[in-house]
Length: 106
Image (tube, rainbow, N blue to C red; front, side):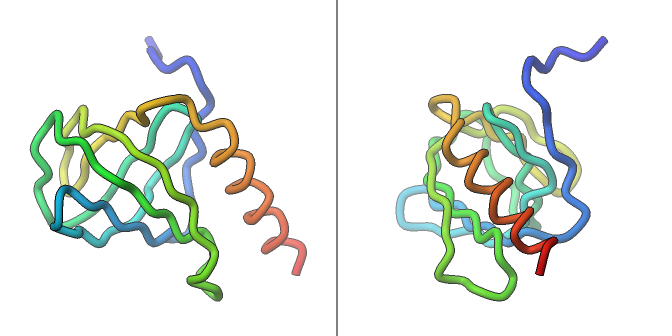
């Protein structure tokens, strides 16, 4: 039975992201995204309960477009970590959708 309360978008293209824990930065990709969290795929193993600053680059063409939030590592999976945002990210989710829709119409 599905425990998630919010729709999760499974991404069909790689969306670049960085995660910062203290002064260490990990590069990776967002595998899926919801209002409450995301799956961050990376070759780095991030310990559970680590608090992190997150930057998502939703446009491959323009790295100046950045969405920023904070979260905590809550689940380790093969080559990734489940991240729970510190607060529901309605604005981030809405901006991400608008950028994705704009990109699809170009």
